[in-house]
Image (cartoon, rainbow, N blue to C red; front, side):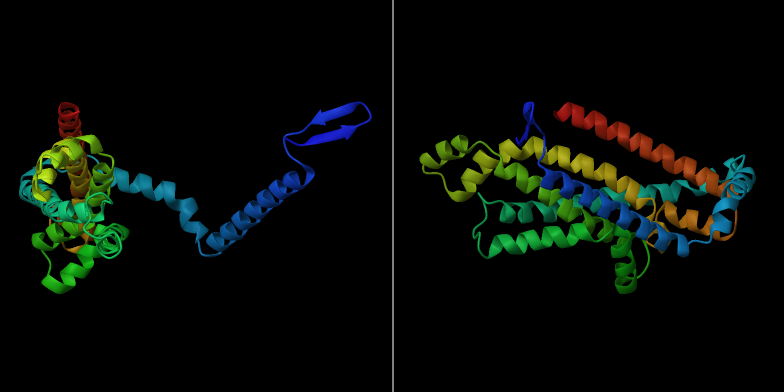
Length: 271
């Protein structure tokens, strides 16, 4: 800690003059960047619509109230498709994420120089692209529908599941693995009896957590044509059927709340 010499003696200071000036310079730079960014945003914004937004929102809310409850029977099948997209996509992702995780973990990869970087590349690349973008690409390749949504959810989930799983693999108790290895067990036996039992709770928690996230993501995939209840939402918005839109949003909210409750109960039972 710097000391400032004065006539009355030494005075302790938290920072030197140079450090204080550097700190103020960083603050000044941050304020300048903020002002510049705000200016760019302001120039690209039509403020008339912003000031008029509360009135427009109130008008839409009035048109959407009350919800069209008679439309509920049309939503059961799309809601079921949404649940299938989330569930099957999560299962497919877990099947692909497990080997990727073992290849990415330092203590299980067959080659830290060649194989591990490829596994990490798969994890990063699948996590970096949003599921909506994957859905748009897959619709162009395999056509619109539920299958495109399942594949989009699966690809998006691989990196998430594999990253958390390979971190759990790297944090296992090595003494248990060493004890099984000392018995003369093969590599597969060590993995089956020394590693898998230790990561099983983490794997179950990751699976349930990702399924909960995928329920949310699958509700909007229909907006780009990947099936599910989002398709009904898009159709209702295109026809300005606001009572149907409000009902669909309530159904989506209920589905998300139920999935959150189920995932919390399952995680609580696992932990």
